[in-house]
Image (cartoon, rainbow, N blue to C red; front, side):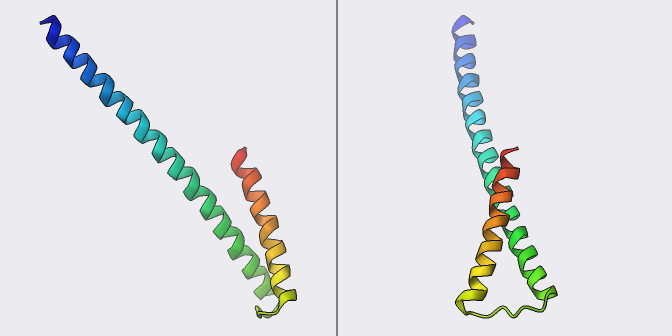
Length: 84
């Protein structure tokens, strides 16, 4: 009887460790997805604001530079917000 209990205890400990490990992976994935969605939301906001202002979404350096700067600011805010 004692041996069966010990065997069961070891099996449960292994299951528990596996579950803890999987939960950690899920939480990391959740964090990654949240950050990705926040970045996408920031990019959407930048593009919507540019469209509302009537700015053409061209391919020249000046326009791209402005968009990249705005996008960088959104990303910084996203990172700070995620850390909170």
